[in-house]
Image (cartoon, rainbow, N blue to C red; front, side, top):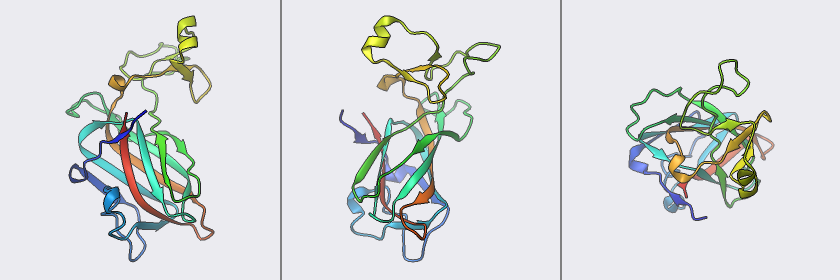
Length: 197
């Protein structure tokens, strides 16, 4: 699996909830320039919000922290669009899941957990038709053996894995840093990358 960065620093707006004196957010989107400038530092709780001028397809994101100042629990919020122009009406930011980075200063890659689309499989009206992941309670024997399905996070069904072509378009990605490996709650982030297979 080869991942490539699909983030265009010129077409991405970045906003942060707080910054400690002497730190900068401008080098976060360009990992090769992270050695040249100050990293972004903050105290928890804090957040980093990326807004894309044009919707992008992405499957993963990567973070590089300074060891000892790592956010060890992060809530991942995503806003999606069903078309490349971003003209479809989206629901705004929705919680996709949580990630738990290790306390180390290496680049760490995480899969973007997209929230389910449509209605719950236990809803009285039945599942909604959508292009997102399909939540089902039964699978064929071929699907079970092929690895094309995984357990849904809520434990109430199965999510069929999507191909790269079925990835939704991202319009926003927000990370909420909740815990820190530092006893004073400090975090230091050198770079963020948004990746696609």
